[in-house]
Length: 328
Image 1 (cartoon, rainbow, N blue to C red):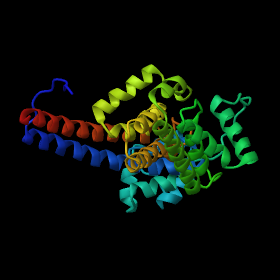
Image 2: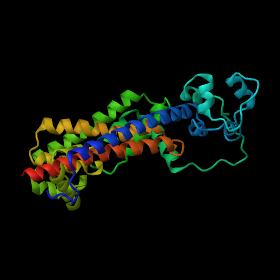
Image 3: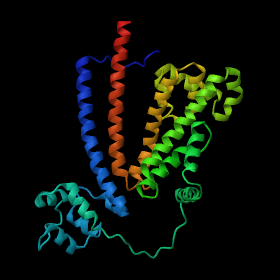
Image 4: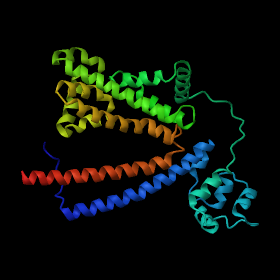
């Protein structure tokens, strides 16, 4: 495969860049964890504003923006007089000899939970209607609805498997569903769908695949797209099409079966890829919830962390490919 043109990367340059990216990842991982802790506290309270509390939030903002009563601040700070209005939460935590996260958690508990409003009730959003529909289905038919939709999605049928997995993550955090059994059921249903379509690929000839494959997305364009992925990434294509490009997973499964890919190899990639897919949808639904404004800080740090991780992987890949080309 022909590589895009990149400037030659020497070993010292590689080590320097990898060290910088590792440092960035450690910093962003810490920021992601801290912002998630704040987000989790806000989601538990059900107060979106609580997710905006930061170490640099001032005392004035605590009163005016977040609505915390001065008497509660006096009680929390164990003082008879509030410090200067520009005093930050970080400084307050140092004065109380507690961690910033611990103080933020205590401040979140003091944000008013009820806001009076005279606005008329608004029409339910598309997400809220979808959530209500899924809750009705789950109440009527149980977990079989979720398993069936994910299984059909793995077969390549146009069903909302990803959004449904994300919604069940939200419901699991809210305590309306059991998190671990639900996640395991989603994973097994997706892998079962992969295995069925893989076996169909093993048992079918190319003429049959072309004739009937369109029902599971096996179109000419998707076939070429997946073949290009196989050419570029080899077996990793099975991993990628279970997670990042899951909409063509059925096509990849058919091609893997028809090309004679070993069952154990396919099964291992299927489990690993579907676990990544589960984290992307169910995991982020559980961690983030449905209010992306509330989760903006966490998602921002997490995105930068993943970007740094991806950049390091691409950099290492380029380095080794350049040296393989030189030695060939």
